[in-house]
Image (tube, rainbow, N blue to C red):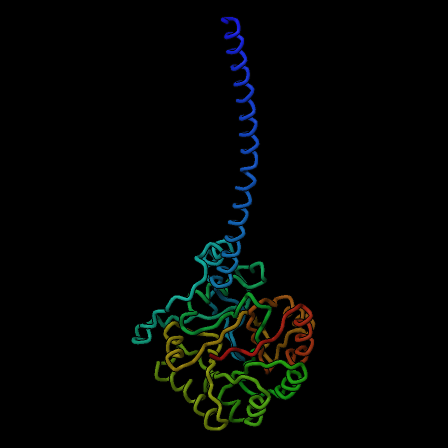
Amino acid sequence: MTKLKRNAVIGLVLCSVLALGGCGNANNEQSSTTPSVSSDSAAAAESTTSSSESASQSASELTPQETPSTEFVSDSSTPAPAESVSESSIQAETPPSTPAVDKSYLNNIPALPNKSGGCGFSAANGRDSKNVPNDMYWYVKKYGKYNADFLQDTNKNVIYLTMDEGYEAGYTPTILDTLKEKNVKAVFFLTKQFIDSDPQLVQRMIDEGHVIGNHTVSHKAMPTLSLEQQTAEITTINNIIKDQFGYDVKLFRFPEGEFSEQSLALAESLGMRSVFWSFAHKDFDREAQPDPTASLQKCLNEVHPGAIYLLHAVSSTNTQILGDFIDGVRAKGFEFGVYPVQ
């Protein structure tokens, strides 16, 4: 019996060892599948984070770019601080939201800074992956609260054509012909001189579905004027266009692109949306027009989602290349939008 008991005990021990070995293999097998599940979860999380960052970039990416906006453009532009506009820092921003903007500054406009700033001619701080000048994001972020546009939606391949009309140089009828042929609607920013000299062209713009904007009475840099003078520069144009054409003007462009926080707030208080740009070129000097071929290439090379193009209607180059520019933009997969007024 003793021998049998001893054999039985040995047998039990051997079975226990074999059983433990089997459990160990099961555990190893289970642990080898666990990272796979964990990896899938991590990938999903990473995908969610990437989508969030992408959305945040389009709403947070905000800053300046190209030319002052008129025939009498100065070189006194204000570049965005380089450290404020890197794409990586933009992507790291909080995902987009639409928090209520504090508009209490409208209660004391004279207290706002009147330091003059403006848009420059080049994308001094480079471009992001969508070809948007990084400076534009800085401008939108800093000044967008004043009902000011420097850029439109960068998630859509839609661009907006705006044209400044300081005076008529003989090209506007041809420009309107091209826009009608190509079915493109533009914003025309008008001075009093243009309205007084060519009311029939203003009426044609309205009849053909273009948007009329305010470019002031005398085309002076707004921050150099008193608040009362600035108010008159804006309201006089609005009243003239309303009285003569029955048209309510809602868009405003600062002469030479020169503005201050005080002047932005004043324009906003008068019910205006200030429209700047994310593309312009040196087209405003009638005596020194840029080469048409080079200008067309520049216009096409710098196209980007949400672009606001500033072109001057006094330019023979712009008039010559306009049709090819429109065709080239569409060939790149972009379309021209009607500028949102509200």
